[in-house]
Image (cartoon, rainbow, N blue to C red; front, side):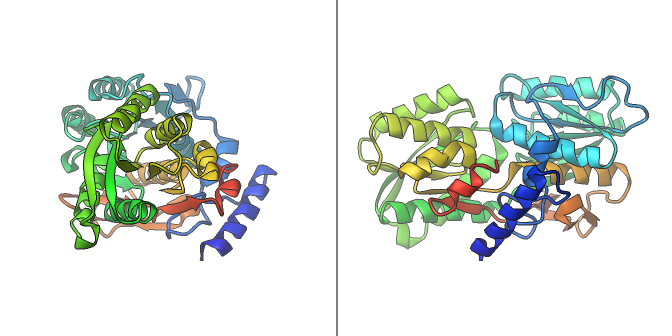
Length: 371
């Protein structure tokens, strides 16, 4: 199924690189299959520095202002996510404001939210460093008439109108356990290298990993540690080294964070643990290609972060333009991703991008050039 989609998508990416009007999907598009989305051409048409920038020169010329706040600077995943957001907003003829703090803290994001309220932006999309701490600032924004949504890492339902989710959290968590179990032959110690301890997306995936491990078929697998690298490269390296030292019988590491999995891949490579400790998780193909090709990471998963941002951009536009209010059952068109429906999500609602996609030695050479 994916082989046919891959061929089509690579053809589209070549067209995009030559100025063609089509877009392609590098992982987990709206229908869970590669093809027909925002992805690679967004990188060619939009530059998104992971700091504080706008698409205009100061005078928006009457354009509506749409802001996105990522977790922190220096994160390639976040840079790609903001690329997609910027592309969507500019397709609608409006202004994108891209922001990210130096450190992945709620306090830094709160300060940015306050600044955006003062700037009277039309919408704020936030990738939350904490699900609850942003609530007072985001409620203040909504009371000021600003349309608030979260993406990737959610804020609580009271702090947003809708959430944009990368993929089904249950399927992500269960798939990661199934993957590592296959890698280690269904037996041995495993550890999880996460981002921050407050990251809602990471914590939800980890809960589903633990639920999957409750199945009797995993009785010989033991989760010994959940470590946190805070989505910082150096700390993720240190945490990986600590896992290897503390658990000499460790057989597998799951890193559901693009920063963490790349750091773990480097440590396992540099310290000669290829074949001794298996690695999987969620990673960027361009960063993980060398580890997949070498066998340090037999395979991994991800959706396209450009598409996550692109979908959030169109959701923000639909909220501001009154096409949707964030209620379950509402539908809107998200550019090249097609029609999307808002569904229930606990006390709130969400928009689902699609399924995660598996990257392995059979396809990584093609995908590493896409994103």
